[in-house]
Length: 491
Image (spheres, rainbow, N blue to C red):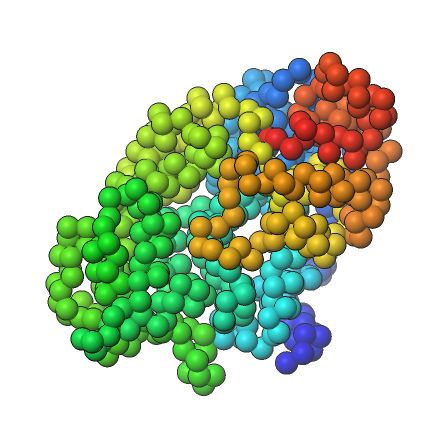
């Protein structure tokens, strides 16, 4: 089915559904009223010499504040930290009206909608990747549920899949929707369970060829090793090579269906390919005859293990606090993870209550995706710049869904320092109207902010000072100079 006919049928079905509902004229008109972006108007900006709690929270728990965000959060309470904490709790609950962001991606990208996994094979792989990249950018730019978007990226790296391997070209879109996006703020056990049986993960880490029904057949250990090393316990989590082998035996027998008439692309368990003998994993015996339940028992063991709590806590603290997170903060977050049974919302609440989170400001280096989206959000960009951003992300080495190894894109600063030249070129292109679809009115923004210098403060989170202010003033506070400045690379 071609893309145009498919979209026409989807639209027609929606219209028919609304008409058949028998709603009144007012409801009918409301249903067809297109969501619009928040109207831009005068906004306040940070006026301190250092980053305050509100801007800090907006920077860490989003892909950067938009022009109106600082004013709106600052108005939540008289004390900046209290206001920031109230906003963070709203973000953790993720109940904001997000119809505008939904419209932005739903109106443009069809392959990442609610299609069953088998229907992804109807599209060319390049269309799936284009839609996946476009919708990911559109949501990061426009969504009001910014913490959710940040966590989607965190889990996408944690359970990384390279879209170039085999059928991952078709299946990665389904995986992103059903694993990282669906469970971003849910339960860790559900997240791991969904990832383990994701058709894309079964392809990427060779779970579909892990067969051990024949005594002479050695199970494939690829997924078992990464499950322990990267997804749960961590490389120093206390497991052994024997544990890897036993987990591989327990996870044997799963395939990805390849017949169109038999639920194409779905995972399936083949008992004859499963090692149904007794296993011992992390000191716990899995009795013989477990069949497909061996998978669930292994996942329960690894998700409840203390090393998993410490490893996930360390990764979250590295992401939100510092490249080398304070041990006391990690222990606090690990305790919350364990006590809540891996509840991601409760774990994040504990992290954002640590003094380390509030003390470590401006010390995290923006990865290229974060840098680009923060610039677009900071300048209140409208339109659809996503297709124009792909080449910039590629040059900076940070195209989502294309990292070749299972560990995902680096979270720490070091590996991204080589992207600075391309950041400067992007800053110039954006400021000078050379990024197609990235529309913003600089004169109006400066007027609403109270001048160019105050607009600069809204981007940096503080008043520029000293030599920095002198250089920016000499450059007339042009946005490319601000976006390319050393200070803007950190958050």
